[in-house]
Image 1: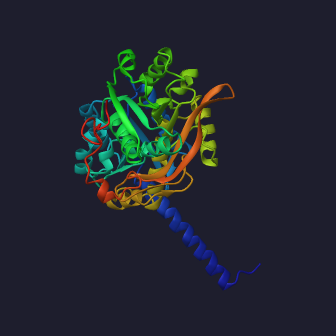
Image 2: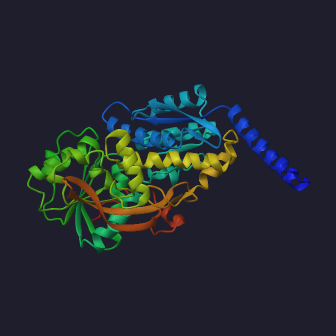
Image 3: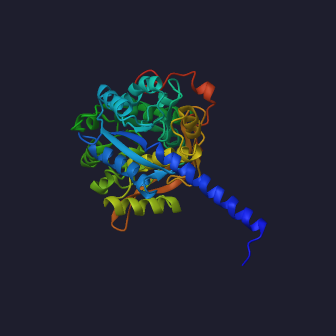
Length: 417
């Protein structure tokens, strides 16, 4: 068949486009892999939390074949426990020796806050997985974005739900005695009391607490509910001893979502039944995205996904979406950072998510209740608060005039007895 001049031009044009595309792919490959760093506690008392985080983070990259925008992705992880100085040393290693293009991680508040200055100096795009409120409020830096949630963002809705739906008016608190516990209770208390409720007691336990008996002995019995913030082994011990003291069935427990999170829920028994909590995720969240994630995670690890595996999975996707937006040109730090700030995911495993002007996610918060289904415990979603901001319903400028929620001063304890 004779080829016309027009057909020849089309063939040549198509070939040119193909060569240009191949050229871009070769150019991307020539730049080497995109190096992604991850800081997570893989040893010590928080090792299970860290394992869930690493498994969730790694899973997304494996699902996309360890490549994005024509470039191979190389993951480098560092075991960083809770000491800020140690975390900083590990991040220095990732940034200066491994020369990562982007990093993610962290778990406890002191770690996240300690890394801010170094991240700013290095101009290293960093996806923080720490909940400390001020990281995206009064101490923001442009190079740090959060894809997790601020601590109080998860409990503002619980204050509303406890007062309006559950009808509680008097609540006592037993919480971890560091920023996570202070901010979690603070967010709940502010909303609950502005609606007309009263927090009448605050008890604080160290992260190393091994026996809750002294705290349970002090607990007021004339309250409608107890608000608790614990994670890991302390969460397991708290609910077990709460039942042993005969308090289960008499005073309901409401909580920040980590208390009954799936990283510890399989080890609990009937003592966890009925606990209501708020968080941005549940392993049984009924969406196509979460069903697919849950099945893939369970197949890869033999465990059901937890909060701690869900938000690093989101962080990994967030990084990849940013990489694709700049065509793999992560060496252009400013452009890559801008792309990361503009990521908007409508089908995340926990629902729609995007970051606000302060670098913190706007996302759904779910009220969950522990129930038994199919012979195992689960966090059944019973209510959804859509598109929740870290500032709840307050105007950001008004919210930020107040200090960060703390142990004693704000919001204080004017109704304590």
